[in-house]
Each structure stands twice: as structure tokens, then as C-alpha cells.
Image 1 (spheres, helix red, strand yellow):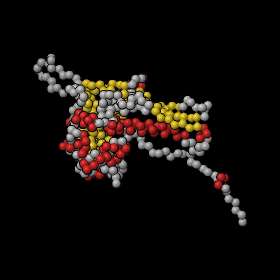
Image 2 (cartoon, rainbow, N blue to C red):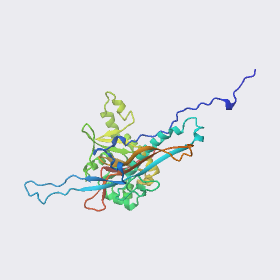
Image 3 (tube, rainbow, N blue to C red):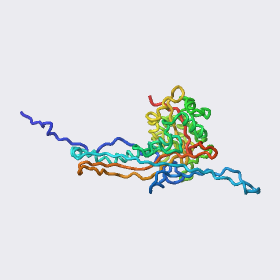
Image 4 (cartoon, rainbow, N blue to C red):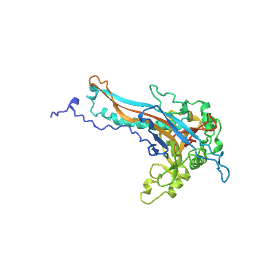
Length: 386
């Protein structure tokens, strides 16, 4: 019996219309961003009507002892104030296709342009904030400001900084830079201090994070804790995946979550022993930002062998109020290609103008001493998974 078969070109080909885009993480900094003074990452929008730079005034608290019944005239205290400058630049991206290509498309690949561009914008802002947290404060405009590629990160990028610049930052911020789990690891030479970080004792741990918190509370100017609506005060720590792993494996943190976390209601669903999520210890929220670890691997490569015995080191950022700022000139908006070759080429894009910076203040008695305002930068040993 002759059985008819379907020739290959006549076989029905069905393609799914849904494109599975590469997973892009939401901005992990988002819950701590806001326009209020108490926000960890302040959103400033004064340049929406135009301009390239904005001034952010910073004022420290009064520290004088005052007078009782003695003469107050001539004994007034000067208000210590400083204006931090923030520059903004443009960030744009786009995709384009020809009608001849879109006509072949069975899955509307170009239809994914807008969500892909939206994801790109979220990633760009997240990465710029990571870079800003690690950058060294500078009163100068960004090196690439106004160039073809633009430069939305204020300060001196860590990997581009010279040894002398790192040492200056290290000395200016000695009350808010921690190396490992001991204050004695500090050295005026930044590279030497990194080399004091031991591969076992100086990992991310309960002892390390609580020491960083005590440094924040004793720092001058003071680092104000992040305030929640119910009146409790917290510091928030941003850590990469490797450092966060070590926090989760710390025996004291495990015990706290095992013995003190709520079990009633949906307590188990919020316990990090059972579900992934933020850690909360001693008034410190520890939030994982995986891309911090990726920055060590791909950008801050000098940290890959910076510790004792050439150990990998990662930064951890313990933040209080006004640790960083994201200043906007124009919020992200869609754009469309005009040179369309009589409608044959279609292009869609996005554009925004902003600047990201770690907030800082100049010491009133020193013309070069720039002190980061709301963050303790801690360095820990954080080996990559074997």
C-alpha cells in the first residue's frame, strides 16, 4: 500500500508568539529610593526644567556645649554647611529593523523592543548606583561628561582611581571604612589594609556587620539610620551574592533566624532559613544585590586578589539616610526614529538624563578632605564558589 507523506516544505510550522526574554532583575535598590530626606537613595528632580548640574546643601548638627547664665554674645556656633554638586548626563539606547526583516518574523521579535529597552534602563540605573557607591568622592565633573558615550556617574570610578587617590579617600573616611572584622586591619595605605583581610576570620558575618553598625553610629558627621514608618530605626546593607552567602552561613545569624523569627501565621514564608530574601539582624537589613559580586569579577578586578594570600575581596555598603543621590533632568521616555527611508525602517528607543553619586561633604577645616555622608564601606573576604 502506498502511504502519502508530507514533503518537508509543506509541513506545518507553528512558532510560539511569546518571546522568553532573558530574566532581568528588578532594581534591588528601589524600595530605598525616595524624595524624602530620610531616604537612603534620594531622588532629586530640580533639573527637570533644564540645567546640567544641581547643588545639594548639607548641614551638620550643632556640636557646641552652649552657655548657661554666661554671656552668649560672641560665643555663637557657626553652622557647618556644604554644597555638593551633582552633574547629569544623557543615557540613550535604541533598536531598529527593516520592513523586509519584520515581514519574515513569525514571533514579533521587534515587538519586544519596548520592554527590552525598559529593562535596559532599569539595569543601567542599578549598575550606576553600584558604581557610585564604590566611587571616590570628587568635586570635579565626571571625566566623560558630555562625551558621545556620556557619563552619568559622579566621582572617580574605583578601578580608574590611582593608588594616591584611593589612599586619600581611605584617610578622609577612616571612621567609615572597615576592613574585615577588626578595626586594627586599617592602614593608611588602602592596598595594605586590603591585604590585611584574612580569608577565614574576615568574611561577612554577624560580628563584621555589627561592627560596621557601631562605626556608623560613632562616625562624625553622624550617619543617621534609615527610619521606618512604625518608628523603628534600621541601617540597610547592600551585599553581593558571595558576601550575602557568608552572612546566611554565619552561625549567629542562623541561630537568630532559627530561634527568634516568627513562626505563627505566615512566619515560615518570611523566614530566610526557608525562603530567600532579606536578612534582618540587630537593626540591620541585609539586602542581596548580586551584581555587586559581578562587578568584582568584571570591573573592580583589582579586588580579585587584594586580600591576604591573594584572596578575593568584595565591598559591602552599610547605609543610613542620604547615602546616595539620583538626580534627574529627564525621566525615561520612549523615542522613535525619524529617518525611516519612506517608512521602510522602524526604530524605537529610550532616553533619560540623570546623575548618580555617593553623597559627600568637605571637612570645614580641610580644603581636600571629602567625607562620604551616609555609608560605611566595608571590605570582606568573599571567595567565589568553587
